[in-house]
Image (cartoon, rainbow, N blue to C red; front, side, top):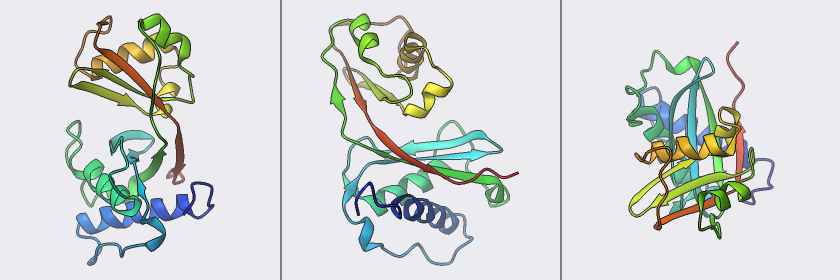
Length: 187
């Protein structure tokens, strides 16, 4: 299934929703395999409740079939995001899902923080910050809350458990594109 296929987003959202419903005991069977989602892919699944973040977990590398990846990340976002208590069946009717399909990450040719800041494309780039074995990522959607590149990068460093003003010789930064689909908000 091609990323330009109009059915891809609805299929991914339906698979994520079915996987969470099964994990919550609201659906007796797990979602069946979808041969259209057999190609490897990397996804993030974001849960929102009344417009507020309720969980977000994903994969940065395409290491498993797309259908398996979105289902596993959906369940992880619902039950194992360390920032939140596990989602309950009572909350489920108020949850809306967003699925992001990540494109290939490309490392920036940058030696300094100013080099990185000059190359970032607010609103477009997902960004991965690496410092040795520390890493953190923000999806492009985070630009909505942090539109200034310097602030965006500072918060990303804090997410990697580093000071906001940290920079060192082992720092590497990569960017990636995202296709995203989301369910309508509850009114």
